[in-house]
Image 1 (cartoon, helix red, strand yellow):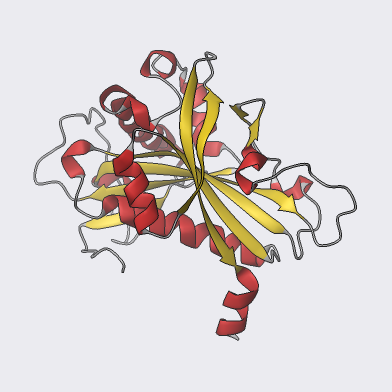
Image 2 (cartoon, one colour):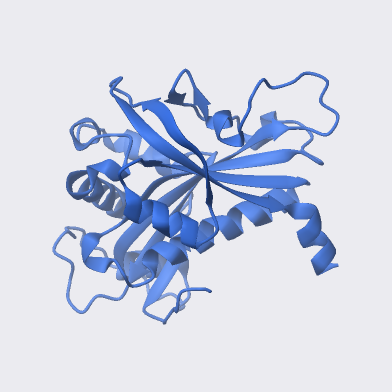
Length: 262
């Protein structure tokens, strides 16, 4: 069942290009502020650390928004008062009320998530095995996360089993229990499904990893349809620090969806 949504609550795909370009930094600043806030108040939700990312240059933050294999979504809401964490003063042109940029800059950011992919787990006529046992392994090598190739480098994806990875999921503690987390999940699931269908995929796996002790996050993923596929996977962060995560997966048979829609 979808979470209730009002005009004041929204999930927006953060654009990679901006018109006018002067508003790019304002959007990046919103993303940076919420990401660093999450690393401070809820570090177990991330594989990275506040100590590392607080040292990032503006170019690094900008590269995350521009990442060709990543789609970042923001949960936004109309605040009763100006949020304390906001230090950005931006004049937004008087665009149509539905304009993406206006909604991103006039509303308070309360949640973010990034969808990485696609990667390829298998192809219908692939003569060489990938050597992978689980779809989530597409994004993990030597116990570290690895970025997928850009779509143009993956070749023909007709009939392929495509894989996406959810990373950086965070909802501000003051905004929880209001459906923002579920709306973010519904947005990334819809985006992955639509893109996989356009690319001609036969099957889709959406994967996510959570700290084994983070039961709140695990319950959210299970509530929207994810299932645990591995309860104990070791991951290293950028500093080489190891943690144990639970891997969850949602599998969607795209051929069945296409049959229903035809």
